[in-house]
Length: 318
Image 1 (tube, one colour):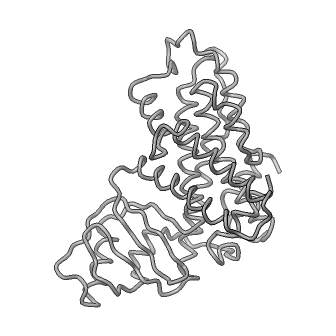
Image 2 (image 1 turned 60 degrees about the vertical axis):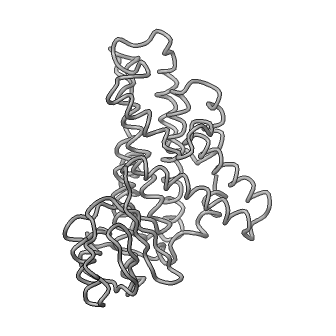
Image 3 (image 1 turned 90 degrees about the vertical axis):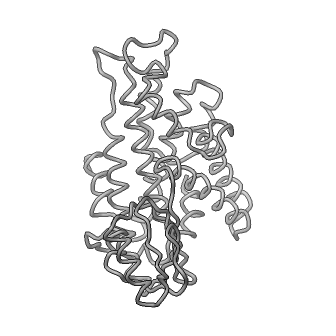
């Protein structure tokens, strides 16, 4: 629904809609270029970067949004049943997962949150800058996977090392939805519009947490692991006789190009886990596609035209 785009758009990174072209520079590449200063003591697993230029920082965010969204849409497109093995849904489940995972990354970055692997090039750059400001104190930044949250109001990026790549990303996305709900609840939009968006966000959290049974919102990752490594859920041959949702699963996955709505999850919440899983994945991908298409409608020359929007146009033959 368009109102979901309008309400969420109010919270995207300021200025991101005005970015036209992006150099091939990722967020971690931006860190390696040392385009920041450090004004507080670093720790080995957490630190704060002070940004020199907001406009310059938008470029790697835009580049990462492009690559994550395009990867998501490419992963979900073309999923279809095998005529000789119509009940084979193993790769459907895995591809839907990764498409949702990439979309979650793109959405988070759109709001200033990056999850990135920082290796020696990046951690050395941070340590070197800290040394320049006499704030190293024999601390060495650990290599690893970090969440980095940009606060544009004070031009800082707070980075904290994560423990589990996929599980922690979903926890971050799950918490992000709650943070958005808090902001929207006190916004100036009409009560009816606020309530509609809040219902959607909470329904998405309900899917991510398997009907509020997993606090971290990592149910999709749990299912993907079980299907991928334990061959569970009757997804691989020989298939479970009770698995009769395969046709609906393939129909449901096609709805990623439809506007986001709470009903995509709500109608499957009390049905099988297979349908709830696909419905939740598709809801995330649909949200990502809708948000980006909305920004493209506002600025036809936006950076998105170089990757995800071009890919969607190619998929739709437009």
